[in-house]
Length: 113
Ligand SMILES: [Mg+2]
Image (cartoon, protein in one colour):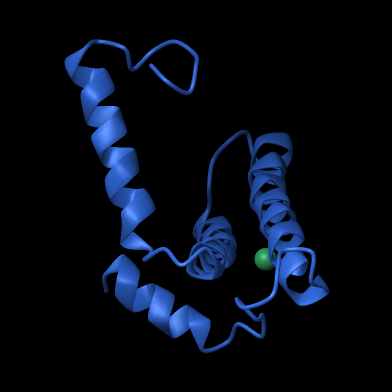
């Protein structure tokens, strides 16, 4: 499945309205939802670190994959609401990282390295 194919499928369950602004509650909820799901993902890893010595079991892996999917859904619909195909941020990110690697700037800080 490509990013664009995933985005089209995710849109089927998006109740938001891209014609309205981000301050419309159903759209703003997407931004809050992304943060919430990212928190749920981090919580799964926290429990692995706290309770299991950092070892991810098969059950943990299934739970983590589900949370990554939840994060992915919000990213896909937020991107759609921006009028951007979902493969664009993926391509832009890989190009950015490749450029940094070529210039030996993978390590370090700053958005515009
Ligand atoms: Mg979740």
